[in-house]
Image (tube, rainbow, N blue to C red; front, side):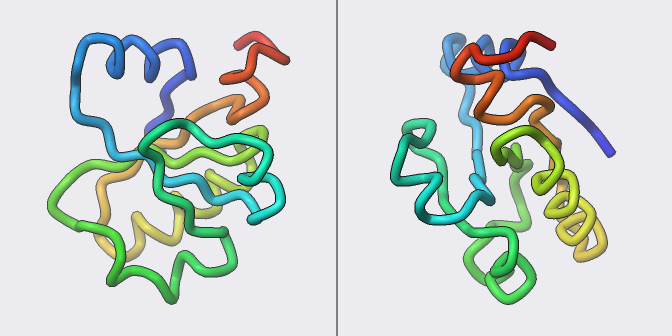
Length: 99
């Protein structure tokens, strides 16, 4: 499974790269904040929402800390998607932990 740190992802965004981020946290977690432009699909809905995910572009998958996004990456990889797990998740994005 490919991984990327939040700092590396932020550098891509700051450089103007087109990044496709999928946030797999639960709605109440997303309500507290989401990366601008990220698509929300809760982990439990990923497999039934494949038609909402463009298979022709790479995606960065994020959750709170990295565990659920890793599970989502496994599901998406099994279905032929190019995905990268964002290590540390939103906790690292918000600066709560360092990786």
